[in-house]
Length: 411
Ligand SMILES: Cc1cc2nc3c(=O)[nH]c(=O)nc-3n(C[C@H](O)[C@H](O)[C@H](O)COP(=O)(O)OP(=O)(O)OC[C@H]3O[C@@H](n4cnc5c(N)ncnc54)[C@H](O)[C@@H]3O)c2cc1C
Image 1: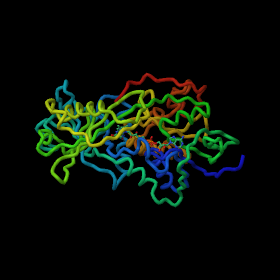
Image 2: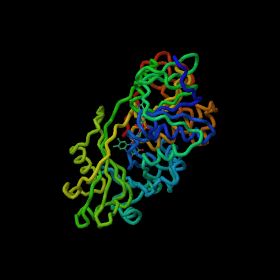
Image 3: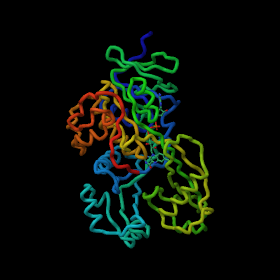
Image 4: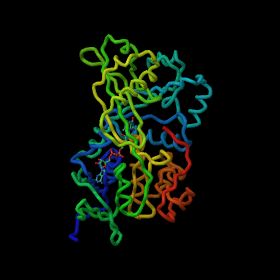
């Protein structure tokens, strides 16, 4: 075997996840090599231009709720110029009463102050954000163009080596170093530390080193609608984002007076077909009616003018897999970002870089991380014998058979 180029740290996958981790490592003075099968960054799910971010306040495991708060604050601090803060409104579910005291207690138990989440009656919501429904106002909620953010994270960095058009087909450990092989079984790179951020393809790469990870694809389609200025829908369009059953961005007024409105997304479990579907647009029209409480809205008023179709990568318990792979020292996994690419990539950047740099994880408590949260994200949670977190954080798994914890499912 001819000796391939060696790097201390290689990141595989230049989506939002790999790019954010790479950016953090570069900022902390490390040299990084990033490799991707595509000719440029953000070619897959992270080509999404209309992603939203806010702390999760609804149903969900307590850990999920704590994690999304930490992750939201990290994402907000990270993205600066490309972070588009417009606020996001979360309407009260149709079958629920608006109970201000109960919501206030719930939000304060989650550590969310009024700048992050504030209950509003329908009258207040109409004044604050132009929506005549009760709910919770997430004033710092924002959207991010994942394509733009990924590219920004990898821009003009001196210590960054980018290798494009290079699919990594398998991994192998030789004498403590990780070797990356292409589809012709040629060793293309070697690394001391290897970060795998290849979404669904992490499954095949991990299988090449004898580890099974329980990942599944979930297809999603977001629709871009155009609305004539005289159509009744025009009166209903929001000037802020809305997140509930589905989500939408603030409607954008066009030069000619009409509007463009992004509404998503379908959630097609187990599917990975990237072709556009009329059925998914119709589903999004239905979500649009629910989001702005306009059951009579005609489908014909929401004319399709574009879409985004992507495949989310989701783990069995709906939390991302972020952390060192204790069974294979030197490998770090950051995948299963599901529908929260913005939040989980910001979290992955801090957690993976701390682990790659061999830092004391106790330092992460300054961001609100606690050992139980690190354990909840660790890939080890899926392997028999490694479930007794947090004490077992550093424990070796007894085998690589995936075990699905029975955590409640979340959206
Ligand atoms: C319809 C829809 C709506 C969504 N809405 C939101 C939202 O509102 N907010 C939000 O935060 N998130 C949202 N998401 C989720 C978000 O888009 C994803 O979580 C995120 O883009 C995943 O990023 P990633 O870097 O993990 O994966 P990807 O972007 O898929 O990147 C993986 C990279 O790895 C590369 N790669 C794969 N295999 C190999 C290999 N063997 N060798 C080399 N390179 C390889 C690929 O080329 C790709 O560049 C949505 C997703 C969908 C589908």
